[in-house]
Amino acid sequence: MDTELKVFFYGGVGKVTGANFLLESKSTKILIDCGLTQGNKEDQELNPKSFSYNPSEIDFLFVTHAHIDHIGRIGKLVKDGFKGTIYSIDATKDLAVFMLADALKVMSYGNKEPLYGADDVEKALSLWKTFSYHENITAGEFSVFAKDAGHILGSAIYEFTHKGSGKKIAFTGDLGNTPSPLIRDTENVSDVDYLVMESVYGDRNHENREQRKDSLRDVIKKVTARGGVLIVPVFSLEKTQALLYELDNFVESGEISSVPVFLDSPLGIKLTSVYGNYGKYFNAGVQKEIKSADEIFNFPKLEMTLSMDDSNDIRKTNPPMIIISSSGMSEGGRVNMHEKNFLSDKRNAILFIGYQVSGSLGRMIKEGSKSIVIDKKRVKVNAEVISIDGYSSHKDSDGLLDFVANCGEKLKKVFVVMGEPKSSFFLAQKIKDNLDVESVVPEAGKEYSL
Image (cartoon, rainbow, N blue to C red; front, top):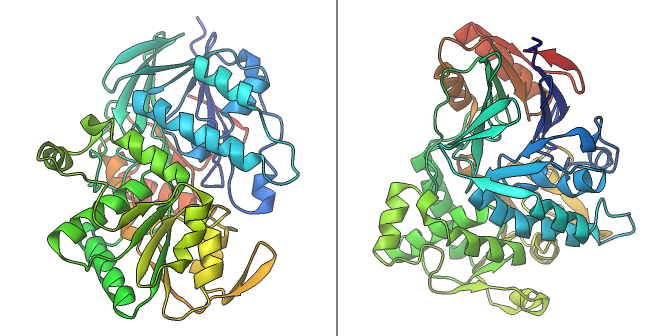
């Protein structure tokens, strides 16, 4: 009996974004994630291209979490013939409803042909089933078990056990920088033969957790004391909710003065409402706060601006103030308007608390560009540029190494993906040197036998 297993890496190789992996046995083909590639123009031009496999032959798609670089090409997969079953944790599907609708809206801007239409998204959602953490389900020749990745609400690590050979391979998705302000810690994976893991911060470490809170509080106090505007480009999913939670605690404890705070992200507002439905996935401390009737995403002077008119009116507010707006990498979205309005004033500041992919406007600002172009208009960057990496929702280099160290003695090989090349190769070498486990950075499209 042929029990050879194969894994292919069609996205998320040599890049942080665009996760798309294929696990194949004799009679079962399973995709793990199907995301958009984000970054510079060259990266984005990969998205309309045909898949390197036949979507109609794929039996299952398992979605690790709802970030667009993990789900953004699902509509195209369906459009190109996928008719199988999509699986995820329940919260991931609820978040994906809004994320995919927003992606469609973004694709409607400009002159390019959208990757897929609303009917493709509707069909994808009709194929989508959910299951729970720690529940075993069957997918063809495999049994599948989900653990909490601790990255964002509903994020999962999937363990696939091949029924014929007993071989077990785990796909981490993105691994959380635990402990998180909001959600539960990353669960360990043990008794696996193979591991496919992310490496976004494979070559560097974050500041410690307490330091990130102190840094955030100090930034807010400094900028508001000088009468400035603090712009925080955020990802609508997870970063927005974590930041609101921290601000709620600061305001309630009196650690910062109460100033106007604008959540200027329609998608962020909608996703925050989904978070409100899934308190069961929050960490114990947050669950305790909720039971004490604390509204963890609401505090005095917080204004949620759904309409464009309300967004435009923000600049009429006298500073100091804080503007939380998407997109998280300053690639489109309402944050660009605020950057045009406020980056030229040295009293103001822009704060990055999330990863800025190579080629993005956010990366350019973060790395010190003194002028940028937004909507064909040149904008001087006189505002203070600040970064706090401790709010990353990804494990750092030491955290990733610890995760591998806890995988058990059966572990034969680690495939290091979802990172810029220097991060991935650094982590692969670190795993070899410290743990004596074979570790490779796979090539795109190459077949790897397990």
